[in-house]
Image 1 (cartoon, helix red, strand yellow):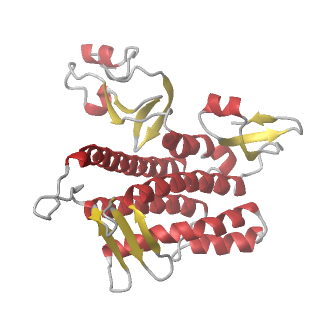
Image 2: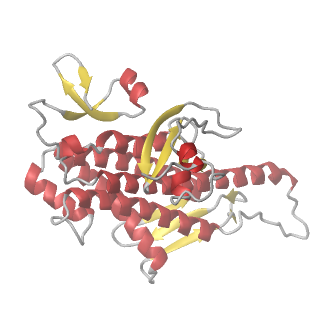
Length: 336
């Protein structure tokens, strides 16, 4: 056996690392492999960790350090993180879903969906900041020579189009997760095919089928809105309006309208559409993966395991609303 080099002693030694930034001293909540790399999930951020051997696998440079990099400025304090990545981490358990289920792919899709939801959230926040600044400046607007300089938020169409595309990416990741459960049974019609499968296997009166029936119109709206952006037609298009002066003399905030036969969206303030979409999309994601997992639980040592909503004390402990548990008639016993 060749003698160990000094670099081997360095790389093989125990590791201690403080992960965080100057503005994030929050505690570490858990760790998770995402995209093939270890990630540390804190209360206020998610960090990608790379060991020196990942950067320099041939061990050629003893000066190479371990690294960490914040990839999201949101952690378990954020509801969006809890509804997506943390719920996925809790539910995508191969012991209960079977060895054939791809935990890695499912969790990676959940993380990609989270990143898009965070981007959507920041777009909404950015628009709100712009509108608040404009509102503060309205008192200084003066009609001069019968002309009024109407303020603008910049490029509202670009903002709305990007937002809709991000929302569609979340739905695409959610459907990719559904395909991991039913790789051969669902396909071209996306969630419509999952709905038909649920009716066939579970029955029309079961909670999963009812949930899909309620979720389908919203999912179709996002898909159709994306088609309006990327494949517009006369009768299928997106209309976006900047701040507008109305006949009443009032300034209307930026608005949008989706002109589409099946899932039209009447004129609505862009900021309201964004807020409603983020809330509904995150909730749909959370419930969809819960129903998918609950419907596909494999027998485990005779335990009557099911997906349950945790009581408040367990929600705080696990950082999620939903998880595996056993109901003994009086209380929920967490499982897994």
